[in-house]
Length: 292
Image (cartoon, rainbow, N blue to C red):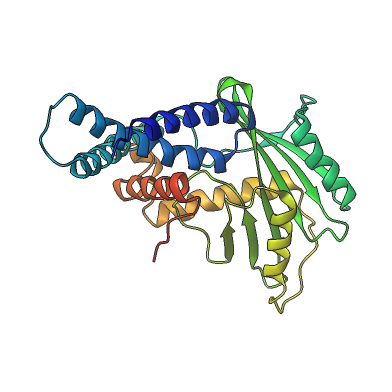
């Protein structure tokens, strides 16, 4: 069977999807395109080896071998990327401050529709925040609450190469007995530990805010304790939780103690493996890895 035409078509589709996603920054399109690139590499390399008579092994053996080689190459690349992040000055749990630059919400039409949806659903803006990760690279967040002040929506804007922006959201509610319900669609790997009172549901496939809000409220239906109204401003609460997350992950061995980070970096070897595993699951399945 001649695989030339299917391989060429797949290559063209992959290039088109890449160009489209440069504008849309859709994690779902990115997942599909990663699988497509993997298959194109595997079957394409096998086709070249057969056509040039560089190997006498069966085509399917060469294709399977090429697929494994691609996996190994990407594994090494991701491992080096994670190591570089661990050694870099970029904080894993950045501290936020009030965004007074006047750029609370990006002006892209697809993102403005989300803001309009929030307003129509009765959510009101509470605070605009910003976290500087590196010179010229910052995370922006707009925080909203519903009319009962019991559901807080943290809309996070992640800058992308080429000036595009990916929007993610984290929904948070706290019960009177101290449980913290978190529902988000973040597609960035974490793989660390959460405080015991956190109940986290990561749903990277739910890209619309409406679906995420629905999922969050479904989770709260089985909760017997009433929800608390938010009294702490977002800035104070968020930075307190960032501090708590860093402390928990240091105590549990995910992060090196501060006095050892200059020599070893921020993440332990086990942590780097967990982040690599989570990144692989998110990049190819759109879900977080499970840990015991």
